Image 1 (spheres, rainbow, N blue to C red):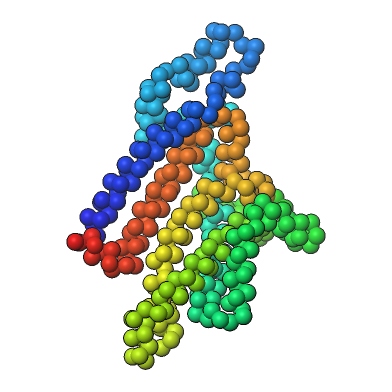
Image 2 (tube, helix red, strand yellow):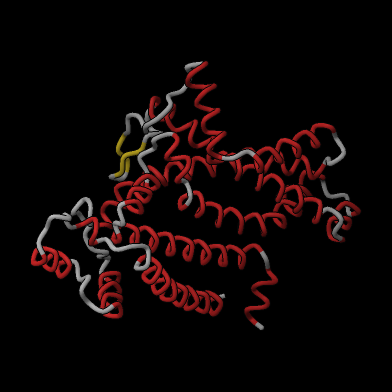
Length: 324
């Protein structure tokens, strides 16, 4: 197991290095930030000074080396627009996005796993068919449309929940969280549900497919023949084995909730990283774009690393392959 973890750690480092090249080259071909940074009426001397200050006059390979040096020290440079460290701007918005993603994933798990388990155990019941039909809607409906409908129904028509913002927050572990206050929790519900809808359908259908794949296996039949209680068969044998693919999806989808919550944050004016990165792209704020992309790369690499470890724990065959 230790050998397997070390091998995956080296693979993760290689992926991060490769992604630094891709991110740096990709960001450097999306336009010239000089056109935004410098007033069109500025003279040539002022233009040259600003270009030299940001290192934009250096060869591309030298800019990449400077970027790597800053990356190793956690320094992505100062934002062209805000004049502050890019990483600091990202980290300021991270708690809001993280809170939204964790809540959405929690909703998806609490709703998707039990419904998927029920639909897999009793596939011929009418309720199971209705559940699966509802999951198709979760896949099909566009996120932005669902968000607007949620606002129209629960905020405009019923007046139950607020339409935008994060609401009042409370500090915990040095970070401000909105779910710790009643009003903040009300602000959190609509965007979290909107973000969770697709993930709920995905986990539901994956769980159902896993249950139907595990139930016909010989070890399930053998357990029933021995007289093992049905609740134990479902809780131990079925649930543990179907969790192997579900763990993969949960890990990757959690990363996507953080990385791609832009639409939901824009609709509900949620002050997370999504709005910041959209503004940075429009303004060609390279340091912020690079800092955001590299954080997402490291997040997905870390999640994949954790998933590999969970695989090793859940599936004995992985441990045997590693020993072989």
